[in-house]
Amino acid sequence: MDVKLSDGYFDLCINASKDNTSNLRSILLRLYQMGFRTVAINQTIDDSIFDTDKKKKKKKSENNESSVTVPNPLDIADLVKEFEGKLRIFNRLTFIYSDHLKTHMLNHCSNLKKFHLYSVIPRTKTALQFACSQLNTDLITINASCTGFKMNRKLYLQAVERDIHFEIQYADVLNPEQRKVAIHHSHLFYVYGKSRNVIISSGASNVTEIRNPYDVINLGALLGLNEVKAKAAILYQCKHLLLRAERRRYGKVFAIRIREKLEEDNHKESNAKKLKL
Image 1 (cartoon, rainbow, N blue to C red):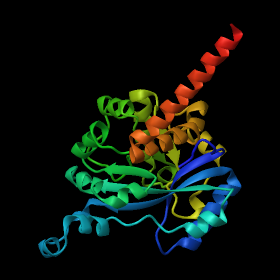
Image 2 (cartoon, rainbow, N blue to C red):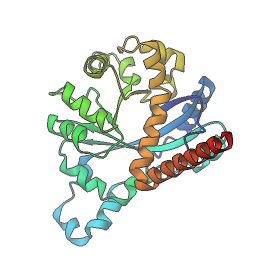
Image 3 (tube, rainbow, N blue to C red):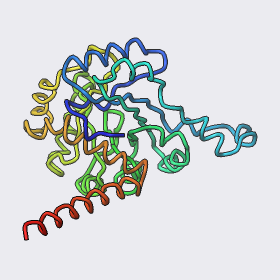
């Protein structure tokens, strides 16, 4: 995944399913027209997919069952080809869970690494604590379904220290029933850590929910973000998040590439100094 050449704005959560390809095409076209250049197609699953009955567990091996349970990324080859040179399109998986043990099961699924981005929505305080302190995820989304608990400064800073990002979906702000909760969580991000490692995405499921980047930046004022932070939330923070996701998927390989590049730069710099002498 080469993100260093990406320019333009990011929307890293476009909800999709297998039966709405035409709707997805309309959303991507609108995003491109509005100035977005990098998007992520999101598929959502919850921990109930691991609640299989005992008979199925006896018939299938654990590895085979896991590979069947977690879906493959949506086949968007036609869309990638259609928008080639216009949009960079990535796959994202969002996992909703209450029991943190289910995340271990998900991590053993081979299909997980096929997704460029891995996000979680914790439904309990314990699930949130695990996501912030131990889970190897890229992104934590806290929305209206996360009731009965709230973020605190310690957990927020733990996640930031581990280079995990938090997501604000403005589709929640547009929804009158979810607006109050969405704004509340957004302001907590500012209170606890001045909105560090926060991105804004649409969370859109249809084209009418898409807003242009400048409207999103202006919306940042309502979410506790100044203009600089709001712009970073749909630009630089998103690029940083994709690089973090690359490290998760490929581990040391990505770190080695960076180290080799640094060593090459240092070598060039030392040679330049010798020439000056």
